[in-house]
Image (tube, rainbow, N blue to C red; front, side, top):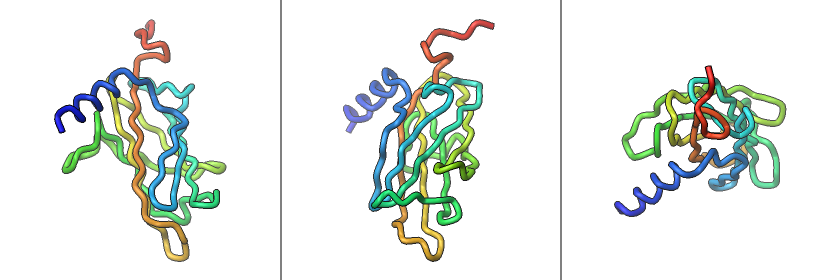
Length: 143
């Protein structure tokens, strides 16, 4: 157990944002993209986009889903509280939110959803590990 936590912490500290990673839960899958340039930066708004689909490629719109986005410092652990909750908006073919990461480090984004009446997808919980840095290159920004 301690080795898994240590490995996860080490992997997060060495890994940049895992952009364009597909996560699946039941009959729902989502692709994560962050802007700017798939390199989240600290103390600046980062737009996160989720291409959220049900099996067969049918998009899931916010009008069909009671969805939430939670941001955790490090990894999500049982009983841990999110650092923040993103306000989700419907984009063109994707669900999006603006997130500001306070310090350099590893974060976990958790997108959860339940179908509204008349929707055919299963409840889902999807998570992505990302790393926010000072610049895309990892070097401090010049002021």
